[in-house]
Length: 331
Ligand code: ADP
Ligand code: MG
Image (tube, rainbow, N blue to C red; front, side, top):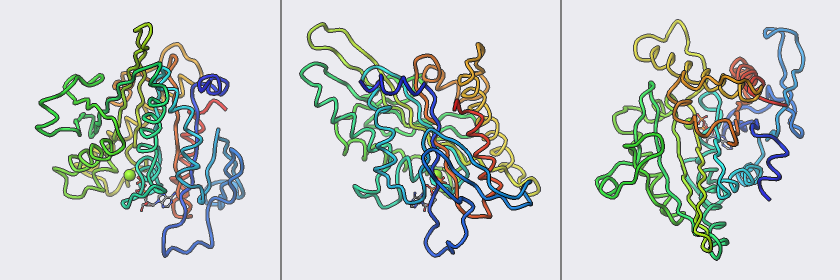
Protein backbone atom coordinates (compact mmCIF):
# COMPACT_ATOMS: atom_id res chain seq x y z
CA UNK A 1 0.00 0.00 0.00
CA UNK A 2 2.77 2.44 0.89
CA UNK A 3 4.43 1.70 -2.40
CA UNK A 4 1.33 2.18 -4.48
CA UNK A 5 1.02 5.68 -3.10
CA UNK A 6 4.68 6.39 -3.69
CA UNK A 7 4.82 4.92 -7.19
CA UNK A 8 2.23 7.37 -8.37
CA UNK A 9 4.64 10.14 -7.46
CA UNK A 10 7.74 8.69 -9.14
CA UNK A 11 11.03 7.63 -7.62
CA UNK A 12 12.68 11.03 -7.17
CA UNK A 13 11.11 13.67 -5.05
CA UNK A 14 12.32 17.11 -4.06
CA UNK A 15 11.17 18.88 -0.91
CA UNK A 16 12.14 22.30 0.39
CA UNK A 17 12.15 23.68 3.93
CA UNK A 18 12.63 27.31 4.95
CA UNK A 19 14.28 27.82 8.33
CA UNK A 20 12.68 30.38 10.66
CA UNK A 21 14.63 33.47 11.73
CA UNK A 22 16.74 32.56 14.73
CA UNK A 23 16.34 34.11 18.17
CA UNK A 24 17.22 37.78 18.38
CA UNK A 25 17.36 38.35 14.64
CA UNK A 26 15.19 41.01 13.05
CA UNK A 27 12.40 39.28 11.19
CA UNK A 28 10.82 42.17 9.33
CA UNK A 29 12.25 41.17 5.97
CA UNK A 30 12.58 37.68 4.57
CA UNK A 31 13.78 36.79 1.11
CA UNK A 32 11.06 34.14 1.08
CA UNK A 33 7.80 35.94 0.45
CA UNK A 34 5.43 33.02 0.25
CA UNK A 35 5.23 29.26 0.82
CA UNK A 36 2.15 27.64 -0.61
CA UNK A 37 1.50 24.01 -1.49
CA UNK A 38 4.67 23.02 -3.35
CA UNK A 39 5.69 26.55 -4.29
CA UNK A 40 8.21 28.92 -2.80
CA UNK A 41 8.39 32.57 -3.88
CA UNK A 42 11.70 34.36 -3.52
CA UNK A 43 12.07 38.14 -3.61
CA UNK A 44 15.02 39.11 -5.76
CA UNK A 45 16.34 42.64 -5.58
CA UNK A 46 17.77 44.03 -8.81
CA UNK A 47 21.35 43.06 -7.89
CA UNK A 48 20.45 39.44 -8.71
CA UNK A 49 18.96 40.07 -12.11
CA UNK A 50 15.44 41.18 -12.89
CA UNK A 51 13.81 42.70 -9.84
CA UNK A 52 10.80 40.84 -8.61
CA UNK A 53 9.68 37.41 -7.61
CA UNK A 54 10.97 34.01 -8.60
CA UNK A 55 8.79 30.97 -8.00
CA UNK A 56 10.21 27.49 -7.49
CA UNK A 57 8.16 24.29 -7.50
CA UNK A 58 8.67 21.24 -5.33
CA UNK A 59 6.80 18.09 -4.47
CA UNK A 60 6.43 19.62 -1.02
CA UNK A 61 7.43 22.93 0.51
CA UNK A 62 7.57 23.68 4.23
CA UNK A 63 7.52 27.19 5.65
CA UNK A 64 9.32 28.42 8.76
CA UNK A 65 6.51 27.36 11.08
CA UNK A 66 6.39 23.72 9.96
CA UNK A 67 6.98 21.34 12.85
CA UNK A 68 9.28 18.33 12.90
CA UNK A 69 6.19 16.10 13.08
CA UNK A 70 4.64 17.72 9.99
CA UNK A 71 7.84 17.35 8.02
CA UNK A 72 8.18 13.73 9.04
CA UNK A 73 4.60 12.79 8.26
CA UNK A 74 5.19 13.66 4.60
CA UNK A 75 8.21 11.36 4.47
CA UNK A 76 6.56 8.53 6.35
CA UNK A 77 5.31 6.45 3.38
CA UNK A 78 8.78 6.54 1.88
CA UNK A 79 10.36 5.34 5.09
CA UNK A 80 7.79 2.63 5.57
CA UNK A 81 8.48 1.21 2.11
CA UNK A 82 11.89 0.10 3.42
CA UNK A 83 10.07 -2.69 5.27
CA UNK A 84 8.58 -3.82 1.94
CA UNK A 85 12.08 -4.27 0.53
CA UNK A 86 12.80 -0.91 -1.05
CA UNK A 87 16.06 1.05 -0.98
CA UNK A 88 15.56 4.64 0.06
CA UNK A 89 17.96 7.60 0.10
CA UNK A 90 17.12 10.85 1.84
CA UNK A 91 19.53 13.77 1.41
CA UNK A 92 19.53 17.02 3.38
CA UNK A 93 21.08 19.70 1.15
CA UNK A 94 21.73 23.40 1.78
CA UNK A 95 24.24 25.97 2.95
CA UNK A 96 25.66 25.73 6.46
CA UNK A 97 23.12 27.07 8.96
CA UNK A 98 20.07 26.43 6.75
CA UNK A 99 18.66 23.67 8.97
CA UNK A 100 19.87 20.34 7.54
CA UNK A 101 20.92 18.88 10.87
CA UNK A 102 17.78 20.27 12.49
CA UNK A 103 15.63 18.31 10.03
CA UNK A 104 17.64 15.09 10.16
CA UNK A 105 18.67 14.93 13.83
CA UNK A 106 17.06 17.87 15.61
CA UNK A 107 18.44 20.68 17.79
CA UNK A 108 20.98 20.11 20.57
CA UNK A 109 18.21 19.69 23.16
CA UNK A 110 16.11 16.77 21.99
CA UNK A 111 12.51 16.31 23.10
CA UNK A 112 9.65 14.24 21.69
CA UNK A 113 8.62 17.32 19.70
CA UNK A 114 12.04 18.36 18.44
CA UNK A 115 13.60 15.03 17.44
CA UNK A 116 14.38 14.83 13.75
CA UNK A 117 13.79 12.41 10.91
CA UNK A 118 16.53 9.94 11.91
CA UNK A 119 14.95 9.07 15.26
CA UNK A 120 11.39 9.21 13.97
CA UNK A 121 12.24 6.96 11.01
CA UNK A 122 13.76 4.29 13.23
CA UNK A 123 10.89 4.60 15.69
CA UNK A 124 8.45 4.01 12.86
CA UNK A 125 10.34 0.98 11.58
CA UNK A 126 10.28 -0.57 15.06
CA UNK A 127 6.58 0.14 15.45
CA UNK A 128 5.64 -1.36 12.09
CA UNK A 129 7.87 -4.38 12.42
CA UNK A 130 6.19 -5.05 15.77
CA UNK A 131 2.78 -4.79 14.10
CA UNK A 132 3.84 -7.29 11.45
CA UNK A 133 5.53 -9.73 13.80
CA UNK A 134 2.96 -12.51 13.27
CA UNK A 135 3.81 -12.55 9.56
CA UNK A 136 7.38 -11.30 9.19
CA UNK A 137 10.32 -11.31 11.53
CA UNK A 138 12.56 -8.28 10.94
CA UNK A 139 16.21 -7.64 11.80
CA UNK A 140 17.22 -3.99 11.83
CA UNK A 141 20.88 -2.90 11.77
CA UNK A 142 22.46 0.52 11.52
CA UNK A 143 25.72 1.90 10.23
CA UNK A 144 27.03 5.46 10.53
CA UNK A 145 29.71 6.85 8.24
CA UNK A 146 31.35 10.16 7.63
CA UNK A 147 32.84 11.21 4.30
CA UNK A 148 35.45 13.91 4.68
CA UNK A 149 37.75 14.90 1.84
CA UNK A 150 36.65 11.79 -0.07
CA UNK A 151 37.74 9.54 2.82
CA UNK A 152 35.17 7.28 4.45
CA UNK A 153 35.26 6.90 8.21
CA UNK A 154 33.21 4.54 10.39
CA UNK A 155 31.51 6.50 13.18
CA UNK A 156 30.33 3.45 15.14
CA UNK A 157 33.56 2.22 16.60
CA UNK A 158 34.12 1.10 20.15
CA UNK A 159 35.90 -2.02 21.32
CA UNK A 160 32.59 -3.49 22.32
CA UNK A 161 31.00 -3.10 18.91
CA UNK A 162 34.11 -4.17 17.07
CA UNK A 163 34.11 -7.54 18.78
CA UNK A 164 30.56 -8.35 17.74
CA UNK A 165 30.71 -6.71 14.34
CA UNK A 166 28.69 -7.63 11.31
CA UNK A 167 29.69 -6.56 7.82
CA UNK A 168 28.82 -3.08 6.66
CA UNK A 169 27.06 -2.28 3.43
CA UNK A 170 29.52 -1.36 0.67
CA UNK A 171 32.13 -0.61 3.33
CA UNK A 172 33.01 -4.11 4.50
CA UNK A 173 35.04 -3.02 7.48
CA UNK A 174 32.43 -0.61 8.83
CA UNK A 175 30.37 -1.83 11.74
CA UNK A 176 26.72 -2.72 11.26
CA UNK A 177 25.04 -2.74 14.65
CA UNK A 178 21.77 -4.49 15.51
CA UNK A 179 19.11 -2.25 17.08
CA UNK A 180 15.74 -3.09 18.54
CA UNK A 181 14.56 0.04 20.31
CA UNK A 182 14.67 3.81 20.05
CA UNK A 183 17.00 3.98 23.01
CA UNK A 184 19.50 1.71 21.20
CA UNK A 185 19.38 4.19 18.33
CA UNK A 186 19.86 7.21 20.58
CA UNK A 187 22.89 5.59 22.20
CA UNK A 188 24.44 4.80 18.83
CA UNK A 189 23.81 8.28 17.46
CA UNK A 190 25.44 9.77 20.54
CA UNK A 191 28.43 7.52 19.99
CA UNK A 192 28.54 8.53 16.32
CA UNK A 193 28.45 12.22 17.19
CA UNK A 194 31.18 11.75 19.76
CA UNK A 195 33.40 9.87 17.30
CA UNK A 196 32.72 12.52 14.69
CA UNK A 197 34.11 15.20 16.95
CA UNK A 198 37.34 13.33 17.64
CA UNK A 199 40.34 14.75 15.84
CA UNK A 200 38.71 18.03 14.98
CA UNK A 201 39.13 21.20 16.99
CA UNK A 202 35.73 22.63 16.16
CA UNK A 203 33.03 20.00 15.85
CA UNK A 204 30.58 22.28 14.05
CA UNK A 205 33.18 23.29 11.51
CA UNK A 206 34.05 19.74 10.76
CA UNK A 207 30.45 18.57 10.60
CA UNK A 208 29.56 21.27 8.09
CA UNK A 209 32.42 20.20 5.82
CA UNK A 210 31.73 16.46 5.79
CA UNK A 211 28.79 14.31 4.79
CA UNK A 212 27.32 12.07 7.44
CA UNK A 213 25.35 9.01 6.49
CA UNK A 214 23.16 6.93 8.75
CA UNK A 215 22.30 3.69 7.00
CA UNK A 216 19.53 1.40 8.18
CA UNK A 217 19.58 -2.12 6.88
CA UNK A 218 16.40 -4.17 7.22
CA UNK A 219 15.98 -7.85 6.63
CA UNK A 220 12.62 -9.56 6.93
CA UNK A 221 11.82 -13.26 6.99
CA UNK A 222 8.30 -14.51 6.30
CA UNK A 223 7.39 -16.93 9.06
CA UNK A 224 5.41 -19.30 6.83
CA UNK A 225 7.52 -19.54 3.67
CA UNK A 226 10.90 -18.64 5.12
CA UNK A 227 11.57 -16.34 2.17
CA UNK A 228 13.36 -13.08 2.90
CA UNK A 229 13.20 -9.45 1.82
CA UNK A 230 15.83 -6.76 2.24
CA UNK A 231 15.47 -3.02 2.29
CA UNK A 232 17.77 -0.18 3.18
CA UNK A 233 17.58 3.47 4.01
CA UNK A 234 20.36 6.06 3.84
CA UNK A 235 19.79 9.27 5.77
CA UNK A 236 22.42 11.73 4.62
CA UNK A 237 23.23 15.08 6.20
CA UNK A 238 25.34 16.62 3.43
CA UNK A 239 28.26 19.02 3.79
CA UNK A 240 27.34 22.70 3.49
CA UNK A 241 26.76 23.64 -0.14
CA UNK A 242 28.10 27.22 0.13
CA UNK A 243 30.82 28.31 -2.25
CA UNK A 244 34.15 28.88 -0.54
CA UNK A 245 35.16 32.51 -0.50
CA UNK A 246 37.68 32.49 -3.32
CA UNK A 247 39.91 35.12 -1.81
CA UNK A 248 40.01 33.52 1.65
CA UNK A 249 40.10 29.80 1.00
CA UNK A 250 43.64 28.49 0.99
CA UNK A 251 45.38 25.28 2.07
CA UNK A 252 43.14 22.84 3.94
CA UNK A 253 40.03 25.00 3.56
CA UNK A 254 40.49 25.14 -0.18
CA UNK A 255 41.02 21.39 -0.38
CA UNK A 256 37.87 20.75 1.67
CA UNK A 257 35.88 23.13 -0.48
CA UNK A 258 37.03 21.42 -3.66
CA UNK A 259 36.09 17.98 -2.31
CA UNK A 260 32.66 19.19 -1.22
CA UNK A 261 32.05 20.92 -4.49
CA UNK A 262 33.04 17.85 -6.43
CA UNK A 263 30.89 15.46 -4.43
CA UNK A 264 27.79 17.67 -4.38
CA UNK A 265 27.96 18.24 -8.10
CA UNK A 266 28.51 14.51 -8.63
CA UNK A 267 25.39 13.84 -6.57
CA UNK A 268 23.47 16.46 -8.56
CA UNK A 269 24.65 14.87 -11.82
CA UNK A 270 23.57 11.39 -10.71
CA UNK A 271 20.11 12.47 -9.59
CA UNK A 272 19.59 14.71 -12.62
CA UNK A 273 20.50 11.88 -14.98
CA UNK A 274 18.18 9.49 -13.11
CA UNK A 275 15.42 12.09 -13.25
CA UNK A 276 15.80 12.48 -17.01
CA UNK A 277 16.12 8.68 -17.40
CA UNK A 278 19.55 8.84 -19.04
CA UNK A 279 21.11 5.50 -19.89
CA UNK A 280 24.47 6.45 -18.40
CA UNK A 281 24.49 7.46 -14.74
CA UNK A 282 27.87 8.84 -13.57
CA UNK A 283 28.14 7.09 -10.20
CA UNK A 284 31.93 6.86 -10.21
CA UNK A 285 32.68 10.56 -9.82
CA UNK A 286 32.59 10.74 -6.00
CA UNK A 287 32.84 8.58 -2.90
CA UNK A 288 29.31 9.49 -1.91
CA UNK A 289 27.68 8.39 -5.16
CA UNK A 290 29.86 5.25 -5.30
CA UNK A 291 28.83 4.35 -1.80
CA UNK A 292 25.12 4.83 -2.55
CA UNK A 293 25.13 3.44 -6.08
CA UNK A 294 22.93 0.44 -5.21
CA UNK A 295 20.41 2.71 -3.54
CA UNK A 296 20.12 5.34 -6.27
CA UNK A 297 18.20 4.51 -9.42
CA UNK A 298 16.37 1.34 -10.43
CA UNK A 299 13.57 0.64 -8.01
CA UNK A 300 15.17 2.80 -5.33
CA UNK A 301 13.44 5.91 -4.02
CA UNK A 302 15.25 9.19 -3.57
CA UNK A 303 14.26 12.28 -1.64
CA UNK A 304 16.33 15.43 -2.05
CA UNK A 305 15.37 17.72 0.81
CA UNK A 306 16.76 21.20 0.21
CA UNK A 307 17.02 23.76 2.99
CA UNK A 308 17.14 27.52 2.71
CA UNK A 309 17.74 30.39 5.11
CA UNK A 310 15.31 33.33 5.12
CA UNK A 311 17.89 36.11 5.60
CA UNK A 312 18.38 38.48 2.68
CA UNK A 313 22.16 38.16 3.20
CA UNK A 314 21.82 34.47 2.26
CA UNK A 315 20.00 35.18 -1.00
CA UNK A 316 22.92 34.31 -3.28
CA UNK A 317 23.29 30.87 -1.66
CA UNK A 318 19.51 30.45 -1.48
CA UNK A 319 19.20 30.94 -5.22
CA UNK A 320 22.03 28.56 -5.94
CA UNK A 321 20.40 25.93 -3.67
CA UNK A 322 17.10 26.38 -5.46
CA UNK A 323 18.76 26.06 -8.85
CA UNK A 324 20.37 22.81 -7.70
CA UNK A 325 16.92 21.60 -6.64
CA UNK A 326 15.41 22.60 -9.95
CA UNK A 327 18.06 20.64 -11.79
CA UNK A 328 17.45 17.36 -9.95
CA UNK A 329 13.70 17.69 -10.01
CA UNK A 330 11.31 15.84 -12.28
CA UNK A 331 8.38 18.19 -11.76
P1 ADP B 1 22.94 23.08 9.12
O1 ADP B 1 22.98 21.68 9.65
O2 ADP B 1 22.31 23.18 7.78
O3 ADP B 1 24.27 23.76 9.17
P2 ADP B 1 21.44 23.57 11.53
O4 ADP B 1 20.44 22.47 11.44
O5 ADP B 1 22.58 23.37 12.46
O6 ADP B 1 21.99 23.95 10.08
O7 ADP B 1 20.64 24.91 11.87
C1 ADP B 1 21.28 26.12 12.24
C2 ADP B 1 20.58 26.66 13.48
O8 ADP B 1 19.22 26.95 13.19
C3 ADP B 1 20.56 25.68 14.63
O9 ADP B 1 20.69 26.39 15.83
C4 ADP B 1 19.18 25.06 14.52
O10 ADP B 1 18.73 24.55 15.78
C5 ADP B 1 18.33 26.21 14.02
N1 ADP B 1 17.22 25.73 13.19
C6 ADP B 1 17.34 25.20 11.96
N2 ADP B 1 16.14 24.88 11.44
C7 ADP B 1 15.23 25.20 12.38
C8 ADP B 1 13.81 25.09 12.45
N3 ADP B 1 13.07 24.58 11.45
N4 ADP B 1 13.21 25.54 13.58
C9 ADP B 1 13.93 26.06 14.59
N5 ADP B 1 15.27 26.18 14.59
C10 ADP B 1 15.93 25.76 13.49
MG1 MG C 1 24.66 20.56 10.19
